[in-house]
Image (cartoon, rainbow, N blue to C red; front, top):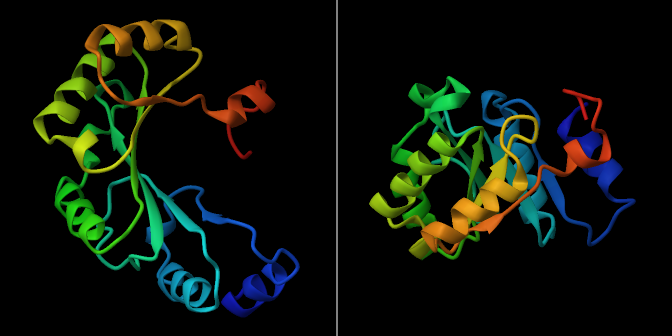
Length: 171
């Protein structure tokens, strides 16, 4: 689907938030002109959910970035693009409304995420979300650990796992 086709399709949904997600949107070069077209075309709320392995430097500040930080049990920690944290600080100063999301699999992941949040003072920068991988870390245990740490983060359940519990991917 071309950028024009996407924008034409969205004309039927005026005023509705648009979120670009799925896989890693920043891999596709066309995402940048799409984001620019959406924000310059009057969309008030445009979100980009990114896996955090690529730089967010080219994302317009009018777009709210939801940046994943990969925890150790994901097996993808080495893919985190750590300079994005400094970019979030710059974007915040420019008026962006970004968030950071940790998807966590274990109490060890939670401890690691707590250390990262505190080390980089992330809760002073942007809203921080902790989300459990349901079949590996119960929401109740994650809530208990967050309360023990007295960390001002939001607990977020991955909604697709609640709506389509049997679908592992593609929702």
